[in-house]
Image (cartoon, rainbow, N blue to C red; front, top):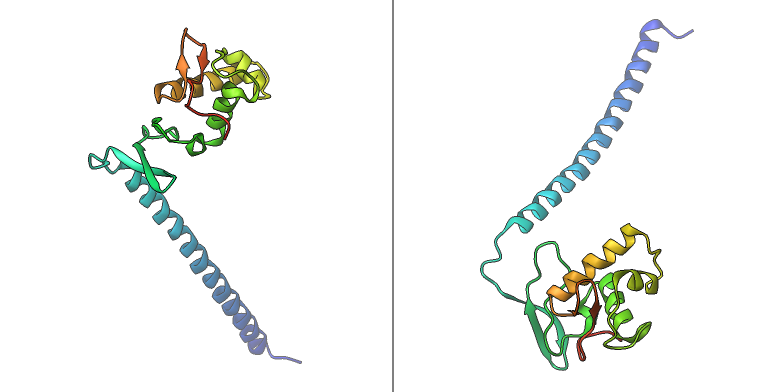
Length: 164
């Protein structure tokens, strides 16, 4: 029959091993947590840094030369349009809007309102979806990719996109 002291030593050894395993897991979890904290702080610093007066940033290569466009407004994914700049530099949601207006589901130069564009994009013409399309179209117009003839009616000027 085992002694009481032997049983206690056995349980103590098992508890110590469990503590060592848990401490190793804790160190690993803390390392992962620290990497996320560093990543979040780094991204925060990058987003708050001034652009240093840089007005241009390379976006695409057209032919053999890099094409530069004005830096987009913070939080925006729509660069300012320039001659030779293809719609492939636009984010997919914006590119679909220019494609619909440029000929995919309409005639080039034909102005469409936001409800028509939402339907052409396969979205339900409910207010939330229409408003999302409208705000994207306004951003595209502000950056020169679309033209707004009458309030809410947008079209793609000749030579400015679509057909990606």
